[in-house]
Length: 437
Image (cartoon, rainbow, N blue to C red):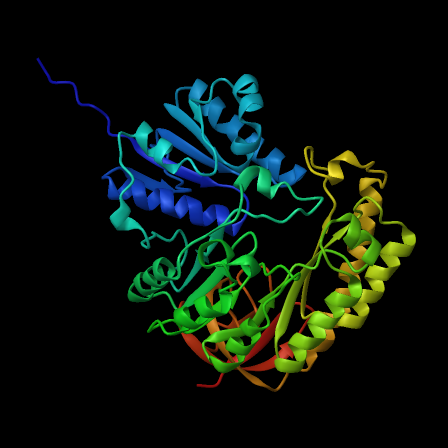
């Protein structure tokens, strides 16, 4: 009589939402593999029998995409194509009770800080020796580094504290250890992320220590670029800019979400600042670092934004001439302060306002890019796409900013290498150039 062969589990992790979620998925992947479990990230293999969906619960579109993905795999389970479906992440943290009632076919729901509980489902242990190590789900030459979790800010529109909890910094020692491990495995660029990087260190060290962290990371051998994201403007530590100026491997780049250009709307948003203070901060940063690229994000259509307030934001964008800008339409989130206000602006009007701001930004970006023509920049090659190698300067982050396109018929580049590129042509959001050395 033939012995029955037990099929070995194969786990596939699906990630929705932001880079912070991606880091969580990479940590989970590392822990599963460290426990000897066959796991992959967004694999297209058809023999994965356990699916873990790391959801996003931030805005309506993202929530709907997460729900659609859950339903897709629940349907696959009912067809016998997969055995188990687990759901984790922000949507699961925020709506666990509702989701359990609405989609009972899911085998278990987990919150944003439930990694040990997920591992228990696989009879696996959280391996402390893997702290600082992380399997990357993309090219290894860059890596996101989450320097803290959660947020203590009271912003009216934001549900992040409901899903991610309060602010918790990771220690400088742990982050340096992670950076050293990354560098040893070929990572050249660290992208520092958090819900609020400005707050870094206050809980652990009783003072802001973002500048100290950046200095320590810049000492790690093999790390060529360090890039700072999601710096809250209120209480922004200017010593960060001083460190940026003194250390050549810290990119002249700052992602600082300002959210609006009207003082009255900023007050409604509970941002703890004014338009004047924001402008003063941007001028102060540019005084110290004239060639810095500042990325910001704005929200169109927040409660309290009338025509006059929107025009203030238009004027703000025209005056500040941000190097990089993203605009979101306001999303009405339950259990937030803004969720108690009347959302009177139609979605079409919110989108029209967002489009208007981006049209202004297109011209600003075009003008700034034209100034780069004829100049040579250090470029990190990210990928080959179609007939071009695609890279970035230190002034551009992954996926959200300008790209440098190099004709693959004329030049050969290796993904993950730095090359010197002379810019020959520029559009609103792309630069074209030739490798010069």
